[in-house]
Every structure is written in structure tokens, then in C-alpha cells.
Image (cartoon, rainbow, N blue to C red; front, side, top):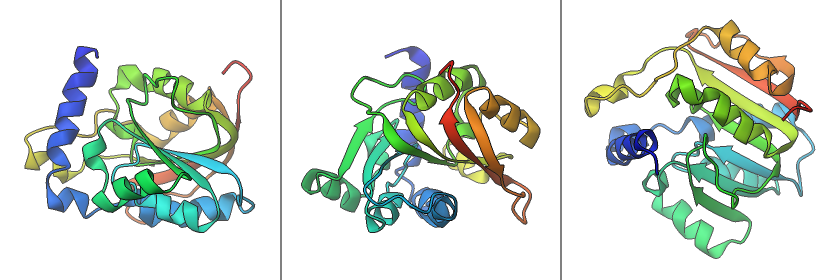
Length: 203
């Protein structure tokens, strides 16, 4: 494990111990937006990159999907989701960095990512997108936060390492996927969604 990956893993093992951080689950809260985009998903598979608590899996299972959860640390998962992954063959969890995915991370029909990308070191964004695109068949949803948030102060760390403009992210994503739709900014102007189709041929 390289030094940067180890440093980031330790950071998130620490922050996920804080109940205030755990109380927020953007993946679960925003999953309904994915279903507005991808309406026919029953029987399909999806990977939630940077799954955090893993609660979004409940949304996907409810729509008849198989779910692969990926996060840099298994300590992020709720205990109930850990149990679910042990007893339900439709749910798989892989502890891995999104910029260095092991072979055991399978290619799925769809991908989903909520509040992950801004957490990555900027020098790892291209590697992450290459890994994610190579595991995509049909497309998916990428939700991005555009500003720093206060939770890092709880452990004296910066959590959002890549703070770029909306257009920067759109241009970067377009290098790896067909962009189908870009949502308007949220009312607070700090987050937006990019809905992508199939990965580009060079991926």
C-alpha cells in the first residue's frame, strides 16, 4: 500500500468513528436522483464508489439491483450493512481505493458516487476516473461537492482535497464518459450531479 493511500485510509478510519460524520449519508439521500435518470434497472448491477455507510445499498436493493460497495475503509460501513453483505449474495463490499482498484472489483451495469470525488487528491483524479470508467457498462451518476465542509475540523484534517469549479469537473468527466445530463446547482450552490452514459472508447 503506497504512502498516500495509507495516509488517506487512516484519515477516514478516524473520521468515521465520529457519530456526527456518520449521521450524514449523502449517498442514501440522493439515490432518488439516480432513479430519475436510470428508470429501468431491475436485474441490473451497480457499484457505489466511496459508499461510506453503505446505506444507499438499501435503495438499490429496493429496486431489484445487485450492489457492489467500494470504500477505502470498511470502518465506514454501518454494522447493519456489514451484516447484510455477509448474508445477502446481492450485496458485495470491497475495501479499496478508487484510484487503485483491485481485480476483485467487478464491472457493473451502473456506477454511483455521491460526495466522493472532491475527497480525492487532485493528482489521483485521472487514475480514479480510469478505474471507474473501466468498471462501467451503461453509465451512472456522479455527485460532486464544490466547497470544503466543516467535518475535517473534528480531526484536524482537510477532507475535500480537490476543490474545483463546476466546469472543471464537467470537462474532466467528459474525458472518460459520454455526458448525458448535468443538473442545475443545488440551492446552496455547493453541489451538482453529472449523469453519464457509456465510457469513452479509449477507456
